[in-house]
Image (tube, rainbow, N blue to C red; front, side, top):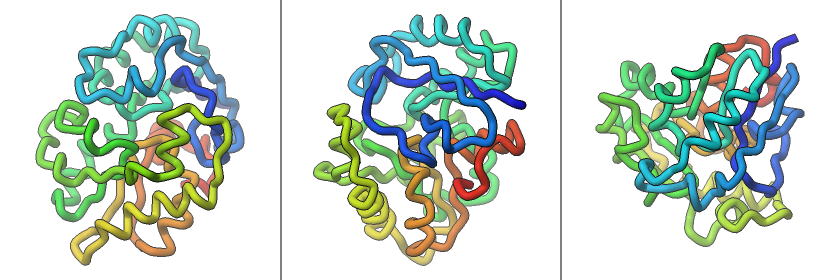
Length: 222
């Protein structure tokens, strides 16, 4: 059986089924390595150069999975750097799929949904994908889900969280939108609710993992 190694931020908020940090999301084994001092405040940063990568290098050295991924898409600028020290496939962020999606969709046709749209920007997008910076939309500042993530709260109301995610999609939905890319790894649990209001293809960290390691993600979360 395959095994996935997750480099998880140093957080304690709930990881419900559909989240990359939940064992129930996968058909295969999930090895979770918590990265010390890699808090949301540290990693969700508009200036990626301020992130200390040493704890992530140490975590990779401990990994035993057939694929290594992370619990935060804001690590996307370090895809090449972290992949270079892995002897198995490495996925820093769902944003790696943008290199392929840019050949299918124009920026107005793609919604990129993130936790904090103020901090996610051009610096986090793959090379030659800069035009998609205008496609980024974030959770509302008063959203329940954003508060849980930002303040590392140990209780999560999935119904409120789903409402938060759908609100972002609805606020920015128009006839031009043909696809959605969920940057935040905490958003995939709400894909079924998103599909009720927007019947377009949805890409996220789970589709990236499944593409690299087939038959690893539970079908109902794809």
